[in-house]
Image (cartoon, rainbow, N blue to C red; front, side, top):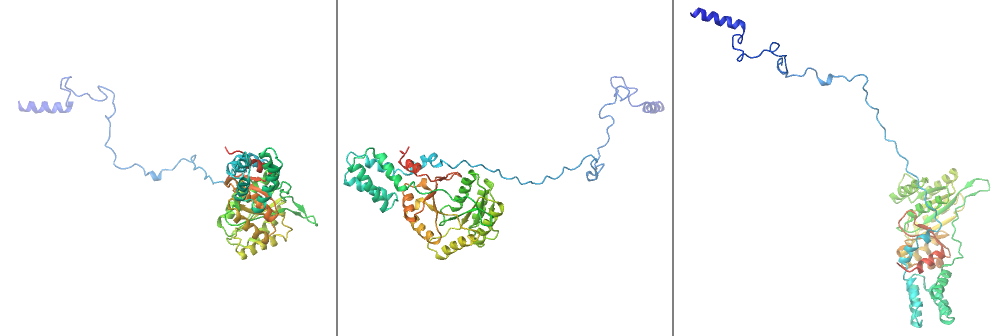
Length: 392
């Protein structure tokens, strides 16, 4: 009985554990009862990498892209708008600033009775507007004659005539910027020297003047002879780049300004330029050694030929102090013209009359704002009309 049980168990073991079991209790076998599926032949997971990723090589067809070098992009060259008529276009700015000289006078002259007290007020208004005592008295006398004695008609028309006479439309306000040829036939560009005290905006004025000349199809070279202010040469170069104008400068801070100015004029001649604009360092008018240095710059430049223009830049808001500056600069170098900056920021537009009387030279350019094209050729008629324009 026991032997039979053991033999039976052994036979069951050779047949498999489930062959004798009822069909409902037998475990199905892959390949017999169904097609092998996922997990039937699974292996133990690997605990190490088959290959080191560092040893894997890319196919020969895969190459690294070439390195892209930074190519400097040339700045876009601007084409400035023509300068003619700018003063008229900017009349509104001037009118808002000069109500004391314009509207104030018109209100006084339009009174029913213009008595002695009114004439004194008119005189005070003119002096306060920086016309100066002499020109103010002259204007009052002519107004008294035309309005008080002759009963001269429209006060505005009379005032316009007298202010225009004081500004003097007969003065030659053109810029001497035409190149010439020497007796030997060598091309010589016109040379413009720009001078003034610190802080009046000389470098900016030179940059804006370059735009005015480029708009007139002039070939311009800039000379950065302000070698004592670190940012001056860089600032001037930026102005030049915007309109495609080259700048001659020194890489040495504090270099001899006369040498830089000389090199700029030489470069202008070699390049066949029409005009060379030379920016100089600002200097206080009471520093004799600095004023002497300015005279040296002019003399060194004149080795190439005469300097065609010496433009004195004045801040219109400084009033009588500007006149003091003008006197000293006129002694150091022969001033040929005045550039009045910030004219739109003062109610004292009479500085135009005063500085012309003081130096005997005309105001040729005026600054009327911070924009790149806000430097305008001075036009007497447009100026007087602007200061008489009712402020809005």
